[in-house]
Length: 361
Image 1 (tube, rainbow, N blue to C red):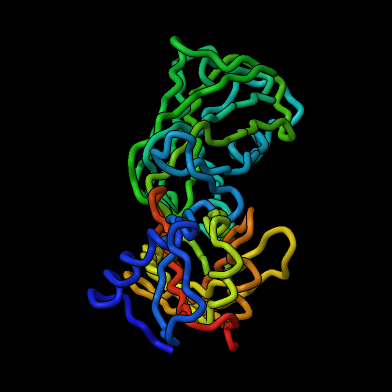
Image 2: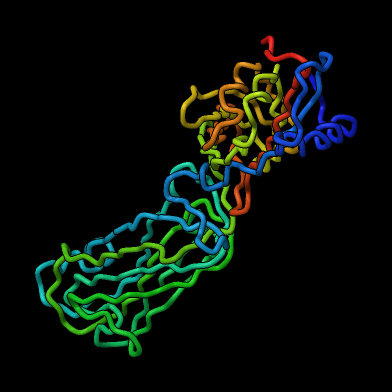
């Protein structure tokens, strides 16, 4: 059965609709000739929002401005023996602190299945824990410096943000710590690289212990992504429930329903095919389940119903249309933004047989 949703069908259906909703004043005469006509029950909009398809660690921000991202905190450290090659021969001795320059780094990964993203706003926090027996910024001679930098993807990638600690102005006391917040620039990233660059000049005498460490803890604070390239193949999303307003139909009308279609007007902004299961359920009847494939873009899907399936729920209270959509396993990664959605509007078109008491099907 195929009844395209066009100008010739729609006016007939809408003209019949007032009678459908007020059957008390539109009785169907039992002695009328046998005649098939089409009636329409308009549906409400529903859909699958983008947050149903996001991987763990990525959620839509409450104000819809972007995605909140959970990036695990990392910790990395280096020993004095690593950062100060000139300290090696003096291990265990008290000597003027040798000068050293050293850089070390660690990668902060995006959540699994987030291949890349564009930073909208936010900051990173880096905490320096000084396990040395001296202040590398103020060793007793010329002042030193520590530059904390976040780059995109690698130690040579685009600079996302940077802060500098300077001796004479800042301190990093022996056994102490300091916290630095770094505002991040808007940029595309596949990962973040935290880099620590230390310049510590010759200093006052100290006992050299090569096992002492300087450690860095790094994490993001309120990081918001404007968009993200994510793996969605096989992911499932729940369709927002929608009420089917069919309770006003009386038994004499329902008995005459022969067959029908759910014409599903779909707007799939995800850019990949969604295999959708539609469920019509409610109290007192067995649920009716249908499947339909929603391609990318705009489409109209015609889902057939038998008369028996329609008579299960027509005329009943509390009828809901729910369901689930699953991205096809072959789907490529897609760029998601907070407003993405697959919207569905389903109108029921019923074939009613007039002039007989039974439906015949």
